Length: 254
Image 1 (cartoon, one colour):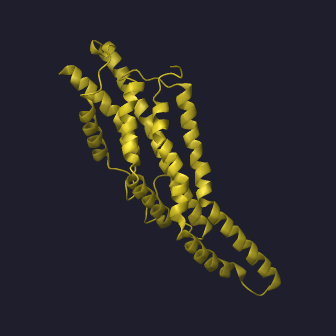
Image 2: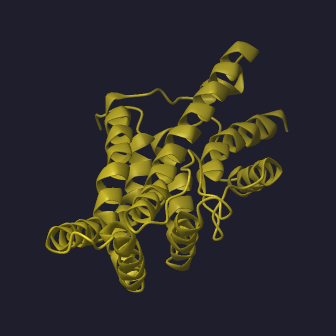
Image 3: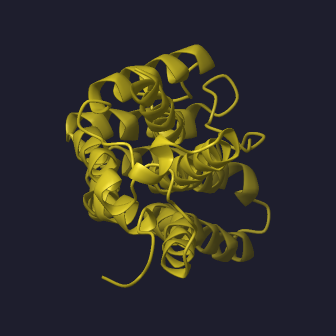
């Protein structure tokens, strides 16, 4: 019974980081109580199939504490991969809002509808796609498979894991810019056109006129934005399970 309880706690600690990074269909983050509850429920489902390593069965409390720290570390490493693959929409949405004239004070967390309506809408739409395409199932399958690559209490950060985390973090900027690229180009063309018009018609207030044109042109371009968003996010979401497993490797060797 004690070994079962130890395994259950360690699995729950690893799942906590992944559950914490899991997006919601309506955007935002899960409440802390729900995160803990889902982590413990996931641990209950896996505790019967994930064995406790032999070296932990008779370990003292110091070794068990070190095992708990390693599980938390691995959980948040995989959670970082998940969050990085999803935070792209927040950056892209904020860039789009700025380019089409819907400026708002940017935040550092998930966009809030009351402060950033357009980024929040895009993030919520990406959350619906995330669950609608079944990416969460692949993510949970990769989490369950991670115990084969890194048994309970044995994880250490490797160069391969650090390289992968840096790569997925860099993708936030690269893919976010690709998502917003059509809107950046549209804003540049409109500003260039009205700059030339301002030279031709000096008495015309081109700045005020360009604001409404940029807004309506941006909203028109936004009407076909779903295909662009899916095209850029789908490759990253398809590679998400493999990224999680690569982060969970204890070593780069076989």
